[in-house]
Image (cartoon, rainbow, N blue to C red):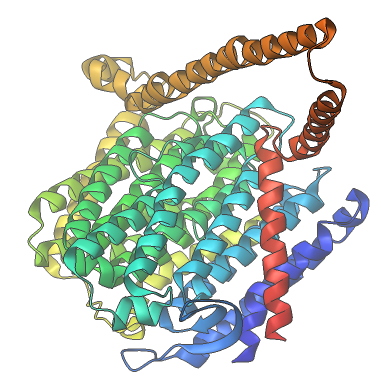
Length: 634
């Protein structure tokens, strides 16, 4: 299966071709990026077919290997392997990536820097594919960091505007907090196992509960940053400042899914701990409910979907925390399709209405039937309405909770499901029904509609593949149990009905003021994002700024004062004519000072206090490492 190495390599080569070129050439060669991801999709289909039927007997097949270091008796290698999990993830990533790139051709066609956008999109796709095809945690971490770089570039694509600049830095710094936990987890892992390989860490090593808990909780903390779990979720809504197609990729099948994938891969460590599974369950349940409540009060159509993503990721963590690895992966797959569909639909809506504020929309269904139908399919899947894919995967999570007797988590999950259906109805009725708020509405270009139609079709049918998917992954996914299915559908129907009652019955003007007054305190708290951002600002950002200002004053007042005083004393001694000849000492001191100043001028170039410069240095180092690996592999 040597061709598997081309799956991440082709998008990476697309970036390598586009990035160094002048802007005009780069823009002209955008089809290279699209062709690369389409080719990767074809190869992913071949790899998936070669792995079928999977199951317990399926073994990982190495497609590429390059050993780049030895530490003690451990071998550090770059390997690409295919097993049922990685084959499935590669197929999902390339399928969604292809849809996003084709859609972007129409969405971004007027952008002056469209070539750079496609270059960053290619690198992002290559990093995620490298992550899912890795066979060791160190390589996974390397790809994880490249994805952080790409998310920074894509969120801040419109860097000339203050909003995207601030959002990109917020995403970078917040996810870095989680990455510290991931890095520490790798150190503890190596100290216990002496290896980063999946086989050695997950299957051969006998984990003790204390060590397993330490590693699992640190990995979970890293996953919480990437997958936007409470309290590290604050970066994801602000990331909506980036281009909408990039949001579809970041928040559907790539970056946010990486945390779920990490916890799923490391499940044997979490199971050996026990405590870590409970923490994962609690974090996921709270995130699912809080994300849904925050989505219900947003007016920006993209932020509704952003908080929805946070909530659905919480659902996946609930499944993993209850021991339902396949249930979590199942929801990850279905969510990738219907959430990317919804984001692409949001892009069409924004293009047509020239606003992101739902209060300024309405009546789009009459003018945009294809978009309405496709978006409606994604909305029903998100709400958990059969026969859409979201119903099957969400039902499987609820079934796991019932079988594991996690009734508190089940109650929270059902509450989150009700809220989800409510804000889905709110979104749909505000945007597509009622009197039109704008004129001259028209359907989008075919290159934007075609990916949406394909994703809508997949969303409508992929849920029926649940049992086959379970067999492929080596675990059972049964057809929905009647009792759990009835409960799930009933909750979704109640949420949709409540949304229709508040937002769907209007004929002229919608007045929700009485509802907001009835839930005054709760609504105020939700509108302020439950004070998460205010808390970070008052207890993290501002104290850090005050500390930095104090250190600057200390440096100028104390350190510089001591140095200047010593300098004046030396000049006085020299002028008075000391008992020894000061010329040689002066020469040595001045020479040393000149050398320090000269070296400082050079080193200062890499310590400019700009996140962009640090990202460039990190990327350069990664590129050098990758080149060494390729050379050694050849």
